[in-house]
Amino acid sequence: MKNFSFIDKFRVPTYDNPKHMKTADLFFNPRKCKQCGICVKICPGGCLVTDKVAKKDIFNDMKKAVKSGVPRVDVLKTGTSLCIACFDCGAACPHGAISIKRNFDPKHFYKRLTQTAEMVYPKKY
Amino acid sequence: MAPVNTTVGEREAKITSADGPIVHPDRETLSPLGQYEAGMPWNPVEKVILERRSIRAFKKDPLPDSMIKRILEAGRYAPSAGNMQPWKFIVVTSPEILAEMEKDAVKVIKFFTFFIDYTRGNIIRRLLILSWVKWVIRFMKNKLHPVPFGLMSQIAQGKAPVFHGAPTLILLVEDKRGVASPPTDIGICGQNMVLAAHSMGAGSCWIGLVQVLMYLPKWRKKFGIQYPYTLNDCIAFGWPSPKADGMVPREVQLVQWYERGMNDAPRVTKQGE
Picture 1: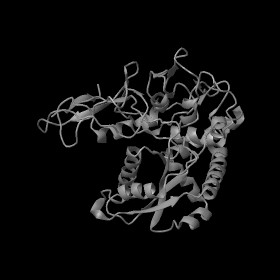
Picture 2: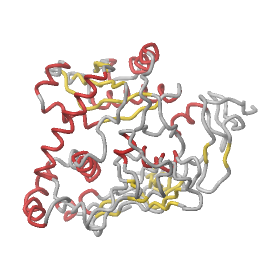
Picture 3: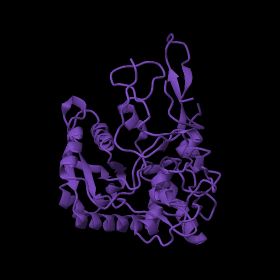
Picture 4: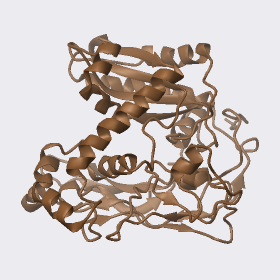
């Protein structure tokens, strides 16, 4: 179990610094992806985008193309993304094209102490 | 004790593991309620709990009134400390009011992010804001956590909506005079309603950003939020479009088990592995 140190208590991470924020890493399999745009539509923070549509386009029924393109995680100027590893996109994807590699874990003040980096499906104990 | 064949609602085929087989819900076996055997399949209640995802894309047509009443019934029967039921439900279905709420929420969020969002704009703005914003974050640690911070930044840029275009909102108004910890009771009550809704095929999403409307006297007056009431949470309900319920991987949790003497260290297990 990780410790929450005295320094951590006062050090607030910079939210757009990749060294302070470990955001989730999604992988979109371009062979399985049918470019339906469902994941872009349900992403909580609007952080999934494709080259053709963003969440607001679908939200306003302005989706122009039938095929929306293979999605990717939107990245800020400094290199961090806003993905929080909820994996709603993966649960909704009808083709199973999305997989997740890491969890969301900010550093310092918002450090998560009992969550480990492994992501597993519910287990029948 | 043979598992019986039951289905919860109508669902499309779901993937049960990252690369595992697709199990059609009609062929999926569920355990009966009221029994336990090690390693048995999920029972319907567990299935609803584990497959519940926060739905953020809804159809335009609202839930029928009778169904909203049925969902509220699940909330009314939630456990609360001292049976004080420290809640008041406000159902908003008027498209006009919902649109107005969305507009005002975006306005307030835009106002605040102008002062605190250092992830946008040029270097001068960034350094200027960074010089003091971390103090604000430290003292508003829950409201300015990286997750809501990022979301508010997206909302201010017009990239994400606040209320997700939901046709029905249930505001969970908390009575501050409840026994022990009224926010806990509100959480239990809301989760009861959410699970009831998902078991009937509807979708739901908790929205804490409704708090930003409480900065405007207009909305406090409209919904009657004054002492002893306070509004911290609301839940959006509606028919999901697309159906997005399904199981997801979660982080393995470290759990401490105190099962020996007073001087012994706890056993730490990995929950889920």
